[in-house]
Length: 226
Image 1: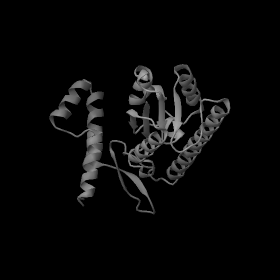
Image 2: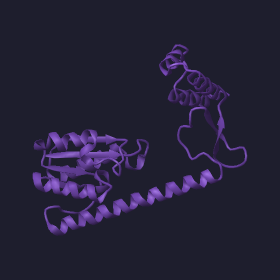
Image 3: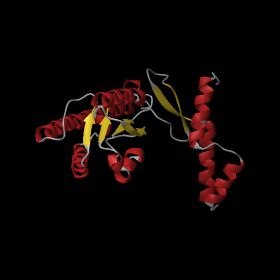
Image 4: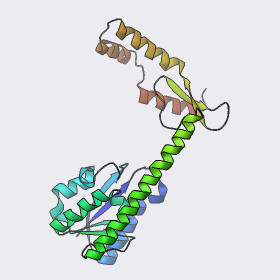
């Protein structure tokens, strides 16, 4: 009895899509003669930030339903863990509960000491890869900030993202509509008006929240509106 484990940090990453992972896991299960009795699917979850036992679906299987399966099959080890300490916890848990950890694309066997060492070594490289990615992303963001450019993501409320008029990329500019709302809110709170009353008034006026404001701006952009 096998539990299929799939995970991805970014839902739009086609190279490691959940569908591709499922296909590889199913092929490995068929090769082993195992029956997949369920799936632990955790989309949009970072393995470097969320421990396997704390993920919504995988955590439920590990903590509450481990009697239902004998092995965990995943596409690659980095789909299961990204930290060596998490890998150590998983190996210990598997030993204590008589489970096997199986990669559909990597050759290792957790039933032997040498096999466990190979798994740990693979986990070390996964963690190094994660650390290197963080360094690259942090360096890229620092470079963009130094040049006064926007590094990406939803803009702070009161600002909007526009094409950089002085070169490549994007920059932040004050959004006249939302910045006026921020100034209004600050003035009213400083004047002594209760925050709940201000919030209620904004809701009655149907002023969009920061998230809805970003969605509206994106819609306008996709429709070619100014």
